[in-house]
Structure formats: structure tokens, C-alpha cells
Amino acid sequence: MLPKQKSIGINTGLLLKKSSGNYFFNTDFIIYSKKGNHSIYSFEYSRQIISYKTADVPVENYSLEVGYSFNLIADRTKSFLINSTISATGGYENINKGETLLYDGALLLNESSLVYGGSARLSIETYLSDRIVLTGFYKAKIVWNTSLEKIRPSVGLGFKINL
Image 1 (cartoon, rainbow, N blue to C red):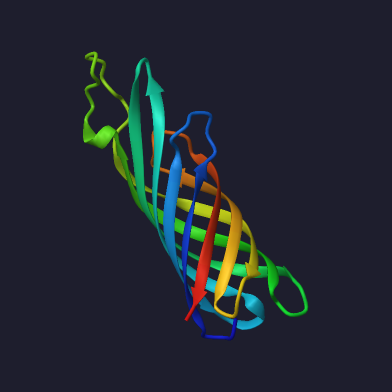
Image 2 (image 1 turned 45 degrees about the vertical axis):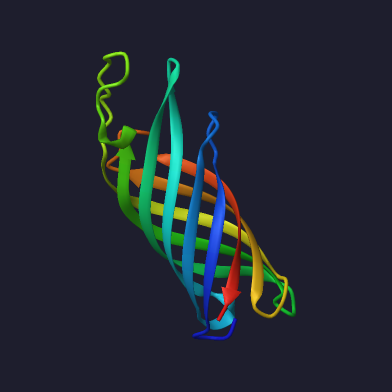
């Protein structure tokens, strides 16, 4: 975690909703600054399912995030850390692959659109080696310009490779 050191992260997890099949993948580019803090640039793909009678309506999100992570707690060797991240996010929400007519003739009122908002993340990191970091996190994303839920909590696991 030297200043200006870079790392690449890969994460996956579950969107916290009652129905199953809700997941996300993301990749991060991280640039460290002083005291274990870092800037984060991320691309995320998420997919959630909305049940309608006997069919499932897929909702896919493609988003970019830019944020800053603050080191809250670390051990003396900085091999175990707890971080808090605040991010701005923007992207595209694709509902039912753009189709508004459902299988039974019903009209879907929700529309695909550009979305924007922010997120907050609390993460726990532990170094497995000098270059590999295991990460677990809880994230709450707030999204506007959507016809679906605005607050989207998730939990995830991932790893980072320090370059």
C-alpha cells in the first residue's frame, strides 16, 4: 500500500433481494495514497430477476463508479484493514432486454434508462501475500432515474492483485 502503487481487483457477490438469481461482477482499478487510503475506479455488471406470474423479467445494469476509500482500522503491519468507500456511479439499466410486451400480452411500464447515483461500501481486507489481498464487503447503492427500487444493497467477495 505504498503511495501511487496500483492494484486490480475482481469481485462478485449477491444483490440482497428476496428472489434468487440476483448477482453482480465488478472489476476495480485502485491507486493508493497515504495511510492506506485509495482512489477506486470500477466497472460493474449486475443482474436481478423480477418475478411475473410464471416468467422472470431480467434487469441488467452496467455501471461505472469513481470513489475514494478511507482506511478506518488497521493492524500495526497493515495486513488486516477495515475501509469505508464513498463513490459516484452512473450507467445504463436494461429492463427485459428492451422488450415492453410480456409473454401474456401485458405491457411492462418500467423502461430501460440511463441511471446515476452513489454508493457506500464497508470492506474488510486481509493480505494473503505481499501482492494478493482477500476482500469481503457490504455495499449500498442509491440509484436515481430508475423505475425500480432506488436503494440496492449487496454483499460480495473478491481479491486484489497489487502491481
